[in-house]
Length: 341
Image (cartoon, rainbow, N blue to C red; front, side):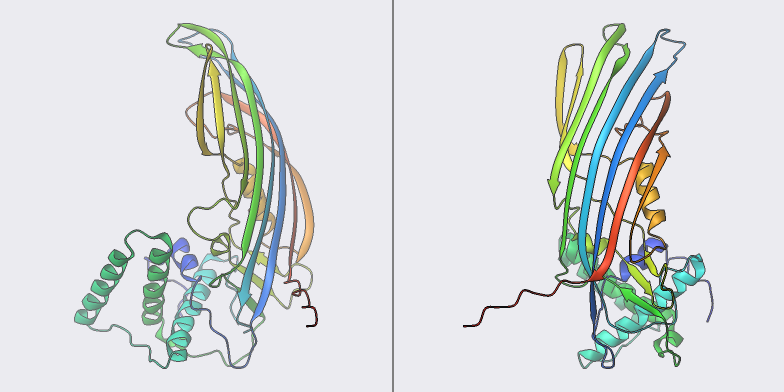
C-alpha cells in the first residue's frame, strides 16, 4: 500500500469526506458517544505604537472574559480498525482516511443492494464529472446539500484511487472511529466580554485622541450553516487506557455579538462574529490531540496578536491569557424511563 496520496487529497478535503457513509456493521453494533467541552479565557493585553510620522504616545489596555461550552454526539459503527484515522504522521493519516472513505462508500452502496462501479475510461470519467457538476448545481447553494454531494463523489474517487483498499483487513484492529451522523445532536453556548481603552492618532483631527472598544456576546448554538457535530472527528485507541482519546482540529463556533467603537465623541455599533484568541484555540486543539477520555487542563499563554483580531493595527502587543479546559468523551446518558400506563 503506498504511503503517498494523489495531490488533490488535501487534509481538509479528506477529513471533510469522512462525515458520511456511516453504516451499521453486521458483526458490530454502533456506539454513540458524547463529547463535552468547557473552555474559559481570561486575558489582558497592552498595545504600544511608536510612529515616526506621528510622534507621540499611542497605547491601549484591554481585557476579555470568555466562556465556551460545547456538547455534541458522534457515532462509531463498532468496527475496530487497523489504521489510526488521526495518526500523528501525515502520510499515515491521509492513507487511513482515504482507505476508510473508500470502504464506507462500498458498504453504503452494497447495503442498498447496489454495486460500486468506478469510472475507469476517459469517457466514464467525463460522464462522472458531468454528473457531479449537475448535482452541485442542483443544490442551488445549500451548504448541507453541497457538503453531502461533495462527500458522495469524493468517496467514489477514493475507491477508484485505492481499489486494493476495498478488501477488508484480515487482522483485528484497535481504533474506533467516531464521526458525525445524520441528525447528530449538538449544542453550544458562548459568552464573551471585551474592553479596550487607549489613545491613538486620529488623521482627521490631526491629533491624539482617546478611544474605547467594547465587545459583547451571549450566543446559543452559533452556526456556520452546518451542525456543530459535522466539524468533529474523534478516534478512540482501545489499546491506550491512559491517553486513548484523539480529537481532530477543535472547532469553536464564533458567537455573533455587538462591537461598539468610540472615538472623538462618535460611537459606531456593528453586529459581527466575536473572536477567541488564536493562542487559546491552538492550545485547546493541541491538548485534545491525544488525551484521557476525561480531564481538565489549564495554561497561561502569551498574546502577541490583538485581542479584537484587528490585524490592521500595527505596533507591539503584549499580554497573557489564562485558559482552562475540561472535557469528557462518554456514553450517552440513558433515556428517562417512561411511566407505566
